[in-house]
Length: 334
Ligand code: ASP
Image 1: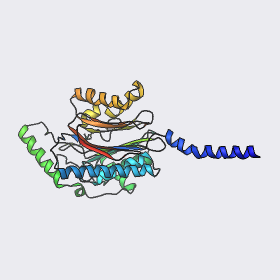
Image 2: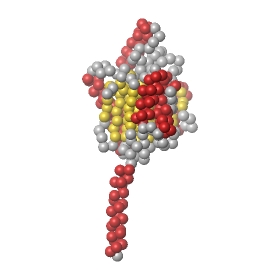
Image 3: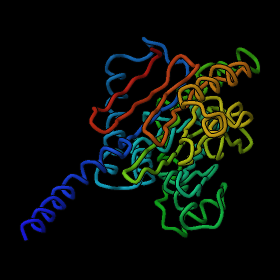
Image 4: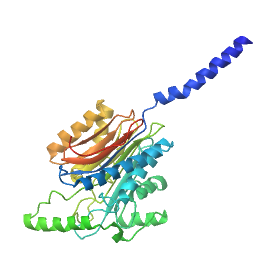
C-alpha cells in the first residue's frame, strides 16, 4: 500500500517535470524579418525617420511573435508580420510599392511551408491590398503554386480577398522616387540610379511544433517594364522553407537572385554540405552573389533556432525576436 502510494507520488512528480523538459528540448520560438536591402548609409534618414522604421519593424516582430506565443503556426506568424509591413507606407510592398515605368504599382509575393513544402505565389497584381494573403490562398486553396496578373486577381475575387483601387498603393515619397529615377536615367543614359529599389519585406518563423515558414512581398523595382517579375514570388529565389534545412527570404537585385536561385542555394548548402546557416548565407551572398555583380541580402532561420541576416549592400532593414529576448532591429551595416 505504502509502496504503491509512493510509486504514484513519484509518477506524479515525474509527470509534473515532463512539460519543463519538453519545453527545454524544443527550439526557441523565433521570428526574423527584413524590410529590404540597398544603399542604406548612415545619414540617409533623419533620426525621426530612423525611429519610425525601427518602430514599424518592432511592431511587425511583435505581431508575428504574438502568433507563435499563442501556439499559432509559423505560416500564420509570417503572414501576420508581412501584412503589417504591407499596410505600412514605409516599405516597398502593398501600400508604398514602387512604380513601374508606366507609373503603376505591380505587386509580387510568395509563401512557403517548411513542413509540407507547399508553396503559393502571385505576380503582377494591381488591386490586391495584401499580396501575401493571396499567395497564402494560392497555397491553401488551389492545386497550383503561382498565379499571375489578371488570373491571380480573378482567383483573389473568388477567394474573397480584399481588393482596392490602384491609387490605394500611391505614396508621395515613391512618386518622387519614380520621377527622380526617370530624370536620372535621362541624364545618365541607360543605367539605373542606385536607389531604384528598396523595401521589399520578408519574414521567417519557427513555431512550437518546430515548423519553419517563409514569406516575401514586394512592389519590385522602380521603372520595371513589360510585366517584369522579380525573384520575390519565385520559390527557391526569393523564398524557400524546408524543415530539413532552413527558411530563407531574399531582398535585392532580383535578376541575380533568380539566376543564382539564392534562397534554395542557402538551404542546399545546409542540407547537402552540412554547413551552418551562417556559413551558407555568407558563401551565397559574399561569394556567389558578389562575384556575379549582384547586391542584396537574405535572412535565414534554421530548425534549431539559429539565424542570420546577411547582405552585401550598405544596409538592410532587419530584425529578430527570439523566445526569452526582446525585439532587436537594425538598418545599417555593423
Ligand atoms: N528583390 C526585389 C525584386 O527584384 C526587389 C527588392 O528586394 O528590393 O523585385
